[in-house]
Length: 141
Figure 1: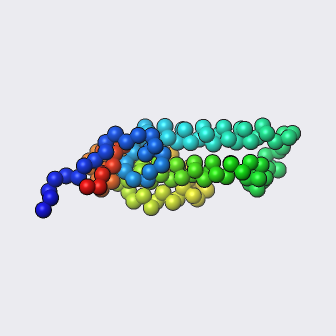
Figure 2 (figure 1 turned 30 degrees about the horizontal axis):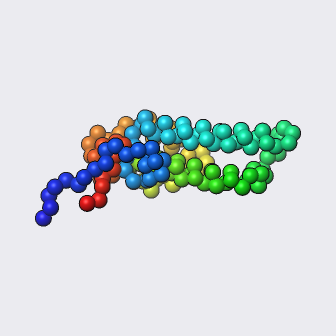
Figure 3 (figure 1 turned 135 degrees about the vertical axis):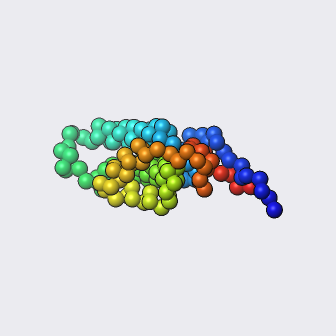
């Protein structure tokens, strides 16, 4: 019977922070990752807005016109949505909750509230089933 503790990765990189839903993420990297995602979204919307001939009223802009204006925008937003989902899952796991609750970020209104609440809740100081410390994850033997 093997009684040695499982090994852990306590120094994962930025690719893990944005792409993997496995592990725990603390408050500071959580906010930094969201800042990066929001800056990229803002830049994409700004580029799109400046590429439209004339200045449209915001009420006249439809999602289909936005998606049809550049075929890469829907792909970009799909990738960024995955980044947000992975970050929220890890943050939920860091505070000791089930990552399933991350699906609430797809509900309008609740998503903003959830992102804010998760950003201010403290991490669990002890290890849990998702990792030994914030910003870490258990490795399979």
